[in-house]
Structures are given as C-alpha cells and as structure tokens.
Amino acid sequence: MQADPFTGRPTRVRGSRLPGADEQTALQHDHERGLETLARLRAAAEGVGFGTDPDDDLVLSAEDGLSLLAGADALWSELDAALGAFRAWVPLVSLGQFGFPEDAEDPFGEGSTRLRRIGSGVEASAFQAEDGSIYKFFLPREGGRIGGSFTFVRDGHEVAFRAEASLGSYRALFEKLHLILSLGGMPTEVVGLTPEGVLVVKQTAGERLPENLDTSALLPAGLIPIPSRFLRAQRDHPRLWFQGGAPWLVADLHAKNLVRAADGSLRVIDLLAAPMPRRQFAGEPLLASWLDRVARDPQAGLLEAVPDDEL
Ligand SMILES: Nc1ncnc2c1ncn2[C@@H]1O[C@H](COP(=O)(O)OP(=O)(O)O)[C@@H](O)[C@H]1O
Ligand SMILES: [Mg+2]
Image 1 (tube, rainbow, N blue to C red):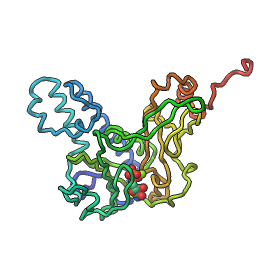
Image 2: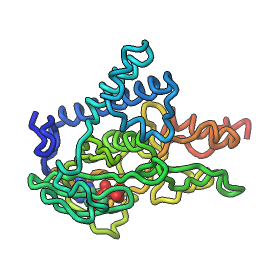
Image 3: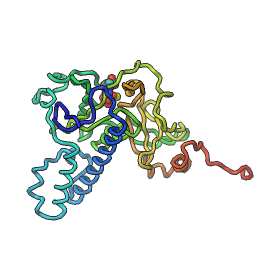
Image 4: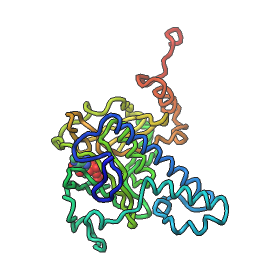
C-alpha cells in the first residue's frame, strides 16, 4: 500500500484514481473493524464509569494517561487495550502536519501551506493536496458535538414524525462515513484526530455537479422513498436505508453532496443520516409495521396487503 504524504501511514486513496474493487471492499472492511474498536472502547469506558455522551473525551483519550492504570485491574486493562485498538484506526495527528498554523485561532481561515481550499460546508472544510486527494477537516462544535444528525419529533395528524437536523457525535460521524461507503460513495478513509478534536478524513476526488441539478432520480440504488405521511425531514431527499439490518434515515443528497468519479459514475461524498428510532415509532403502528415490511421487501407499499375477501 502507498503511504499518505502527511502522516506516512498506509492509504488506499490517492487523487481522483478510484481504488480497485478489492481495495474498495478492503476500505469498507477496515471501516467496519474500526467501528468495532469504537464499540469496544465505549463498552470498556462504561465499565470503569467513564461518560460516553458526548463522546469527545472518549475518542480524544490519550493512551499514556491509561497505561499507568492498566495494571490496576481487568477493567482498566481492557480500557487500555481497547484504546490502543481504536488508536490504531484513528491516530492522533496535528494540524501542523497538514500545513496549518498550530496556534492560530482559526487555522482553516488562515489556510495551509500544503493544501488548497476547495470548499466548506456546515460540517467540514475541504482541501485538496498536491496529489489531488481531498482532505476534510470536521470541526468540533459546542458541547462536545461534531458533524450532523437528526432528532425525531412527533408531529401531528398528517405527518407522524419530523426529522430535524441536529448536531452529531463522533460515533455518528464515523457511522456516516460507513454509510457513504455502503452506498457505493466515494472511497473515504479516516486519517486521524487532532488534540483540538478536529476529525481528518481523506477522500477520492471527483468532479462537481452543476449546483442546481435535481438529484432525486440520480440517488444510489437501494435507497427507499419514505411516505411523507410517516416522516418529513428538514433536508432534501429523505430515504430509508438498511445498514446491517437496522433502518436509517439518509438525506441531504443534493447536487453539492454528489460528484462524478473518474469512471463517470455519480458518487456520494457527504450526507446527513440517523438511525430510525424504532422505540419512538412504536406509538405509530402504521409506520412501525411499514418499517418491518420494507425490511423484508423494499417494494412494500403503504398499507399491509389484505386478502381480497377481507376488503
Ligand atoms: N471528494 C470530493 N471531490 C470533489 N469535491 C469535493 C469532495 N469532497 C468535498 N468536495 C467539495 O467540498 C464541499 C464540502 O464538502 P462536504 O464533504 O460536502 O462537507 P460539508 O459536510 O461541510 O458539506 C463539497 O460540497 C464539494 O464542493
Ligand atoms: Mg456537504
């Protein structure tokens, strides 16, 4: 594998070249193993009474702070091992490594000596390296939050629930990157986390689409439209997607969050998503049973099929 020019770590992403199918599968596999290390880390932290919501302190924990305690008992030693496994996936890196001034109040505003700014949205600032690769810097927000997600609010008669955009967590951000991979989106890799809490992500570069292009007919295959009587979302093109068997709301797939890849395909680079809160939906039997049925059959309609003689 090639080495990343900024961190020296192995990387599968370079410029606009699409990694081969095997490499893309490996990327997704790496990401799944990585998410498992995060789940293990959360469980280990809860085991010693360490808070995991918000999860900024958890993902930013330093290994050397723990190794002293690791000898104390099995729970601390598991936490130390779990943090080591997580750090192998998400190493600590510095903004200086990417050419940003380290002690500036607004390092991304000042710019980098090694990266060229190409865009910035609500969640991240995107830059391009000399080799063409895209690097995104997700900024931590207030209250230990980062990235975006949805909260679900019960509505009324015509619409069961509204999905309102909200700030996310580190875990939600890692899950969003996983969703991008699952949807056949642009190859995306976790690069590292800075001590300030900035998550650095690397992605294959694509060509932008015209900003006002209507993407509703161009979305990745397998996304299921959601009847608006069940759910309205504060973002474009809300869709249902099953990730590992669990229902997710995936949205925000407008023209600025899709690009054309080197092979001509349209690929997702960014989205807004949240797991569907099944427990919250229990009070809406029609919605809950629709979710159950589309899990088995994505073509399932609004209402349960009723035999003719019962109509
Ligand atoms: N892989 C990429 N190829 C080309 N342009 C990109 C890529 N990733 C991001 N960009 C540009 O940067 C902008 C912001 O990146 P994005 O990942 O959408 O972050 P945000 O969450 O802040 O919206 C995009 O709208 C796009 O113009
Ligand atoms: Mg975006």
